[in-house]
Length: 119
Figure 1 (cartoon, rainbow, N blue to C red):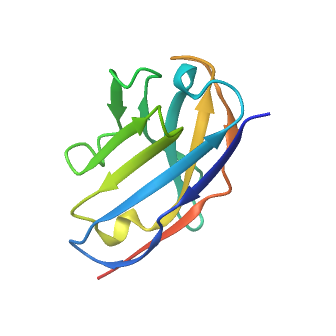
Figure 2: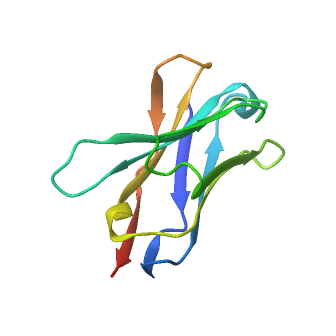
């Protein structure tokens, strides 16, 4: 069973930065396509970014392109999301998720970590 645990959320002022982490246990981490999603109050959960098992391919939603960087350390079974130039619109609960391959559905989820950006 794959388990995911996020950390690194918190309160930051607009223009600031945060780095989220997602530690994965169970299975073979390097084979998973990993992703970050976020859910703002009153909204549906939305895709943010994803990264291939090897780390060689990434994809971002337009809203965060150029500000956020997704990465992974397969030796540590950990994925990261470096978030820069944060705005209040980035306020949300951030979730990490795992899929068995690129293009496969995300079937394993973490519990989420809250990111709040003040203006």
